[in-house]
Image 1: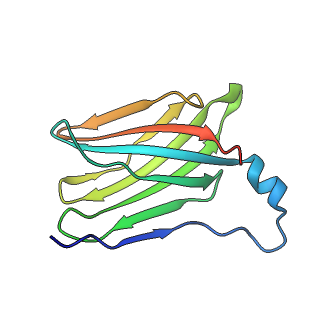
Image 2: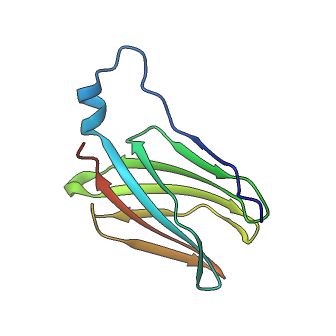
Length: 120
């Protein structure tokens, strides 16, 4: 059984941006991707607010997941996701509270996310 090649493309800091400023707006996004109620992947990425990150896994069961986090009023976060997989595609937007899981299903395809402020 071949191990899928994992390629992670994470947005880079703009030239001259301070690391302290970037860390204040960085979030760890943990996702569970599902088909017919069964998990087929559990990717995670650090996403800087307003700068999309993409996780791509090659192979028969490969997928491409793009994530973007936007800070909203009252401490809420909007997570925009774009998922392409052998099971289908979806592009949901979820409004979440930090640390609280949220999920959406479209037919047999689903995604759950938990977004937490990056603390390191």
